[in-house]
Image: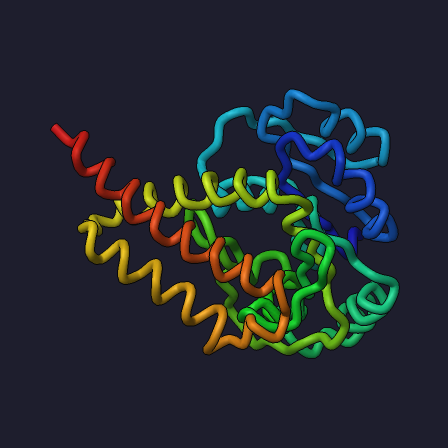
Length: 250
């Protein structure tokens, strides 16, 4: 019987996928759903022993993760992104949680890095994410972005953090701002939301204030300032892109 299945979705993650899989190589099964990578992501994953399934279309983060979940055979599932790593300490906690099975799902604290610095404020830490759950008790929401696990049952928290190498450079920041603002605008458009210029500007300002002051981003130094600016820009762009989507409606 397969005790633990690890599920990963990826596209053009050749720089990350090896280290990611190495950090969970102790699992009974590793599932990678590749979104039509043009680099060696799928090849490397296969070389590392993962079961690789290619779906070149992109239905959004939630639906794509549900595809990966559909291939899992383990009693338990752990979801990890290509830019995340499981430490030895977290591995021990996961294995212990599976043995005890006191809950149906477990939240991990996530410690994220921004351009070389691990961030302790800005609302980024401990950033509990539900990643370990009984297969059959959970599935991913259908959100195009910021998906989450919908769980039937009780939950508990693990103590050791999942490491998240989320933004490696300023080029990476710019790319992800575009990607996430596009996905968020599309999601809001499909849910019937609208936007105006003033609302976009006010929401952008609030995103900065919330990150830098209320969530103490100022304690993270220059990185905290840059994260607050990034959040403000992402917020502004998603509302302006939402306006543009409405303008193209027949």
